[in-house]
Image (cartoon, rainbow, N blue to C red):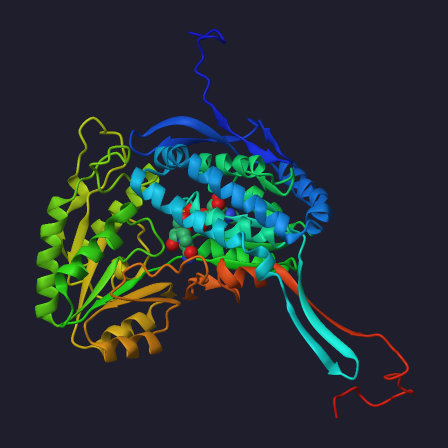
Length: 508
Ligand code: NAD
């Protein structure tokens, strides 16, 4: 039976934000699910090549005036923007939870870390001061300044829909660039909402544009010659592709990829403290963090036994359910497809002979039978050859590997293809110093399980966790989003006027 137009359920569409306007676009769409219910409450527009080109054109048009806006005025927009983010924090967190599934407290946490990047961006006049040397030669002064690139772009993952975009565009725009952002199509609403707040804070139309979409939108950004730099955060296979394709098209690219972070537990560690830290690092946000800890490397069987026993006790206390209920510690996985993928990893761990100490596969949440809930899983006796050791699972699955010495543990970490984060739990300062000095990983914690750098340092992994030269946000972002120009100047006067010189100028 046909429904009359009035009876038809209209699913709201998350569109694009371009030149200061919301663009409705239903030509090509895909459903966005609430992971706690398994229902689709909205759909997201998938931009065509033409739509992305229009966004790039808006960014290009806005660039000359924005480039010439004094850095202090650009920074003031960021200060106002931060106030608006604080004022709307509850709405933003609710949007994140409704599409990503993480708990509201966790959504507030990611927003807070994102706001710290906005705060750092508001130091722009200080960050862009450049370097000046007087009298590099007789009557000659020289200075370096950091000039904007033009139109820049960012492509972001589902797991931090507020924070990761805030790693990118605030720093890009305070440096005088304009920006086109392509958020994850799985949870796009909070990102779009935040972009509109930036305009309310005074960001001129066209300086920040958001296009929702998939590979078609991404490829357009990578190939369009008007886009000068691309920042990417996501899985390693896509990061590799973005880096190669962007570089091929003459762009500056930084592409942050996946991870498999190890935590070493030494025999002298404060075990209850380490286990509490590991619980949050392994199961917080359902393990969907690039700085999550999915592997514990315990030194000695005695340490491993104590860690496994204590983890079992803590896991039994965990509450799994919708992120909107503040009694829950862990929400659902992001999509049904991802849920199936993580469950298949648990099956493979069992098949490969690891000991499944806690099996979260049977977890059911009453009233949410269609939600993508997986309980915490804990494996013991994980071996380096196993798929659950080697590959990024991105779910609530923690594996314990048993080794005999710190050297063996460090060798395992160094041999792994990823090098995003790692940490050591110990009371031995000498061991910790040796570890931080030698380990081949970009971000290292000592008794700190998630060593995510604060906004005034920079974030990035080593090996196949990052493609490019500079890390994300903080001081490296100023370098990434600007090009250095060095000017050498002399004003001839009677005192310093020289005759013709044919030899190479030097300060001989
Ligand atoms: P993803 O790689 O699937 O998607 C990331 C972005 O790339 C999305 O915007 C998506 O639309 C786009 N994309 C997907 N397939 C594409 C294709 N074939 N061509 C062009 N673009 C494509 O990643 P995800 O599942 O959204 O996020 C999880 C991954 O991100 C994990 O691997 C995690 O470790 C990683 N991550 C890394 C960091 C870091 O800082 N290193 C931070 C957060 C997440």
